[in-house]
Structure formats: C-alpha cells, structure tokens
Image 1 (cartoon, rainbow, N blue to C red):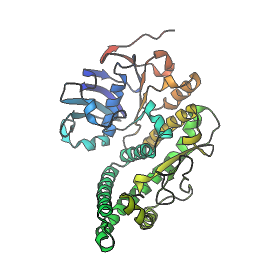
Image 2: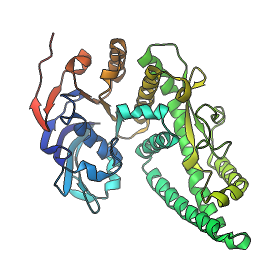
Image 3: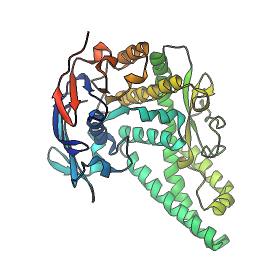
Image 4: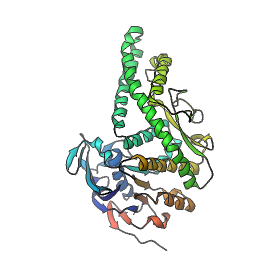
Length: 393
C-alpha cells in the first residue's frame, strides 16, 4: 500500500500542509527542527495510534489549538480510501474512513507502516518493555483482533494487582483470597493466547532478522531472535541483560502449553506476589533476546552492531507484514537513519528497501541519502513544504 496525499492541520508545527507522495522512495530533507519527522510521524500515527517520540497525544496538537487533523489518501492495488483522524487535546479522538465515522482503534486496519528512528536503538539496548511493545504493535497490524486481547489482559492485570496490593495491606490469607483464583483464570486465558501469538511471530521474524542483518552490515555475523518467557524460568524483568535464556527454539509454544505453564508459575510465585503486591509472571514480564554470534546483543554488541541489529528487526517486521498482511507492503519509514551509517551501509540499506511499494525517508543533509532514494524529494522549512532542493554534484 502507499500514501497518495497527506494533509495535516494543526499537527505539531504545521498549521496546514498538503503533500503528494509517489510510489517508491520519498525523501523529506531540511535542517533539524523544521518538521521533517512530524510528517512521517503523522503517517505512523494512522497505523499505530501513537507516536514514536511522545507517550501522549496532547503533544501532537499544535500549541494553542484544541485539536489536530491527519488526513491521508491511501491506495492498495485498485482500491483508494480517505482515512482521517482528529486528535483532541482533551476528550476522545475521532476517526473517519471515506467520510464515515469509525472508532479510532479501527484505523490500523486500513494503514500499515513500519518506522525506524534513532529511538529504536533502545530495542537492542533498552528495557524489555520496549521489545514487548514492538511485538504487540506488529501483532495488531497482522491480526487486529489481538488489540482487544491485549487490552483485556491489561485490564485484568490491573484488577489482579489491585487485589494483591489490598491483600498485602490487610494481611488477607486463605479463604479471603478466593477472588484471586477467578482473576487467575481470566489472566491465564488471555495471557496464554498472547504468549503463543508472540512466540509464533518471533519465529516468523527470526529468518528475516538473520538475512536483514547480513544485508545491512555486510558481515558474516549470526543474528538471532528468541522469546524469553517468565512462565518458563527466571523473571526476565529481574535478570541481568546477559543472563536470561531464550525459550527452546525448536519447540513452538502452544496456547495449551502456555496456559499450563502460566498456572504452575502463578502457584509457585503466589507467596512472592502477596509479599510484593504485584503479578510476577505473564506476558507483561516477558522479553525478547537478540543475539549476535551467540551472545546477547544488549550486553555485548558495539554501537554500530546495535544500530544494524535494530535496523534488521524493523526490516524483518516489514518482511513479515509484506507476507501476512492483507494490505500488502507496509509503508516503510526511515527517520534520520542515513546520518548514522557509513557509505557502504547506506548503499546496502538502499538496496534492502528498494523493492517496497513506498518508502518515506527524512534527512538533514541531502548528500547522506544514496542516489536511488532521492528521485522524489521535498524540502521542509519551518513547518512549510517549500519544494525540491538541488543535489550538489
């Protein structure tokens, strides 16, 4: 799929903006702070209902305004739709497809994108929560029904944690905790589905990660990815970056196996949970282990290796979506990526993304971007689209 036209109103630093986009590569170029990333952030919002830079929607609304509007004409094969979302500073957001109202959470069904930005280095070097979020966002794009499963799990988890905190404060024991068993059943039913779905997705991504790392880095390193489950061993949230073992790569996780292991783990950790007032096992405590030549990338990879690994993860996500999404190719977004790469890796990355239906790129320096990616270039200045810049020889 691809974006034919993108329009913004009171979004970030744009009072109004309208830009026609082409199939293939589209480059937004301009000095830092002019609004390049804001444009691709708007496309990413349509597919994720969130920003890769800020945790709340309020920051997306232009200062002094009550709401912002993102409007995009999306095309896939012979079908074209108009998708719109109004982001309100206060109150619920609103969305439309072809001028008919829909629930905002339905927007990702019409738009898929994969974004890589400097912040994604945290996928390799950061905490487990970021890696879980990456998998869950991809799960929802592939299977939208998982959004409801994830939301129900979060609500159940909050209820169970509230009960555990109350029990800790009051010293409740025995029969007084009968209600906890009810929440256990609900947590296990939802959580085991999430665990199995993440495992399936991780296994689908694994060969793409290996291939993408070799493509980007151009080196004979063995890059791998595997799940680390709190129901199967030590708590990944408590383990050191180099300690947590990955789940057995040869045995796919089923819902029934996950449910049995989840229940056994809850029983085993019941005393610890009552002491801490916190649910200590489940998909909210799991991790994803990235390994390079058999060693955890989080603890051992250099800056350049970590950067290449993060790129490989996003390229793998795009490859999975290309294979499984009904919308075909995702829109691939590369936000300020090329400045961090040497010339050879820039060329390799350009080759890796060349076959996608649409690629959106931002760069502060036009010369940082390989020639094959600059055919459709737009210059950005102070929240205004000012035309195409000249490329120096």
